[in-house]
Length: 191
Image 1 (tube, one colour):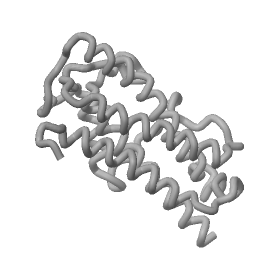
Image 2: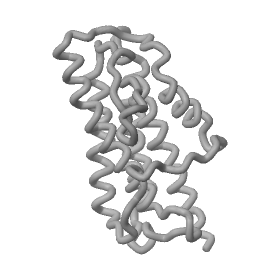
Image 3: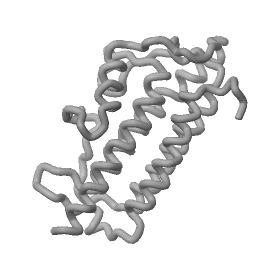
């Protein structure tokens, strides 16, 4: 591996590709009925967890892709360290880095699953698409000053984050909700 590659971007790409493998293992052999099983009325199903991940990753891809292209066009080059980022980005990352012990934060409306008749095959395809796109964008971001590439959150434009923060947020968030989906599968096995 080239020593000039960003460890953060290398990790982000690897974690998104690992998320695809983890999702495929989780959903292998499940029917739509099993994937839509809710362990409790206010708990999400496996499909709802996947839909939440897909909604989030799609919205971040839509923000990241043009921001990176614009930064590249402007010649905004640099590397690690990317700086401290924004306050809201640090807050989100601090929560995600705590893993399962983190305080629960309700998903903003834009990130909440809206349907209950979700089809597993569609969700799997979307998951692969957005996870792979995020991994590709991490590769394309090499050499950019990602701490200076800032844009508004898909939820509230007022909450600005850096591209460096988004790459870490997306992979940590994806794995958090894959863990949630795995717990749903375990609950279903004992139900």
